[in-house]
Length: 313
Image 1 (cartoon, one colour):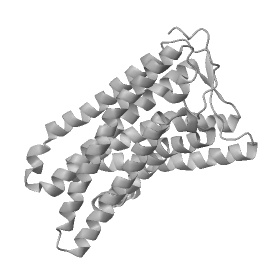
Image 2: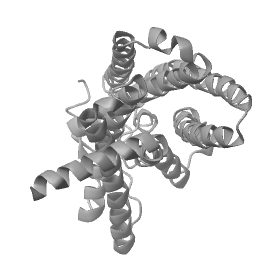
Image 3: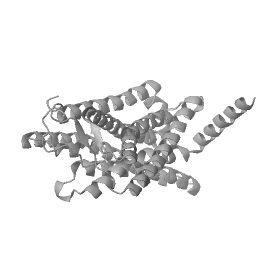
Image 4: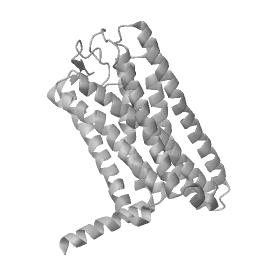
């Protein structure tokens, strides 16, 4: 890479210059990270352990939990280490790796959320065709397509971002290596416009995914209104509305982070927006998608009971 000689490391944005607040940030991020590890880890373990959960919905949920673990593990541990050691630096290779894996997980997750919305649409609106439309092979192909899409998106952006000289310093205005802030270090205005154009073009398919998710839930909500039981309607809405809220938070804040005009950019605003789309969803997705699900809670309780029974025996 042409700029690897001139730039050996980058400086990430600290949350604060006060040591006590840096410690507070460390413990806050540690709590969020542990919650994400515990929640997503329980989902993965329970789904893998209980064969009753080997259905398309839980198969996609398992993939989502793996992506969430990868996403939050790409950014948060480094931010915690920097706060604890009062150090802002990240190596050139570390920055490129962080950018690649975060873009990989981000792209794959929005594709997977789209697939999950389709899964809910078929289950609620076309239940008689569920087994036909979402067979095991079809589900595997859809999940693989989400992972491959994320990988190609990340490869494209990393190659484009780190293949041109950087001469506007080495200070990244974010707590992790985010594409919009790397762009500000480009030497050439032409290269900057090229990469901005690439970001804009690659964002449109993700916005298309979001529109598809919204339309799917509109149809789902219309079907729910025809449910005769008030208790059934309440249960359905209490399940789907949190799903839509988390997806909307994830997509809107992520899109804003990448497409916002430079005129309204500020360190505090960028920090809040990045936390909302990169840190919050992986921590709350287990609660929203699964731990409020009675079937999964029963399987989790059964798994824990079996484990302790075997341990005592």
